[in-house]
Amino acid sequence: MVNPTPAFIWVIVIAITIAIPAVVMYLVTTFLFAFSGGQYRMVAVVNYAALAMIAITLLAAAIAWRARSAAVAAVTAAAVTLGGWVATVVTEWVLSFSLGA
Image (cartoon, rainbow, N blue to C red):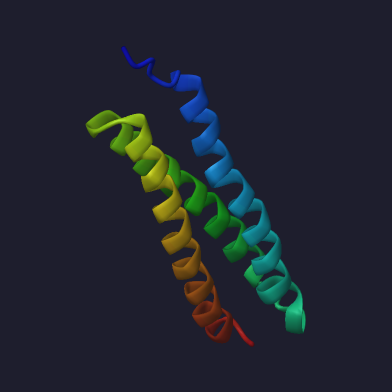
């Protein structure tokens, strides 16, 4: 009989999958968009975008876990994190021009 992986292990895997890229990308986007060129108006955009990315990824992982399994939730969290941060950087780049680059 196969012993399933405990749920707390999957929670830790998902948390690491979300937290490490969130911290790195928050620092990258803060440097790129909030500090370069004195764009003080981009600080709020960067902050809210990081919070939105964390919330969206957690929601997607929770839905995947509920619908399928913990392993699928971990893969979903990784995919949404990757795609979401790419979309976030592109969105912030476009917004930086409209807010006064």
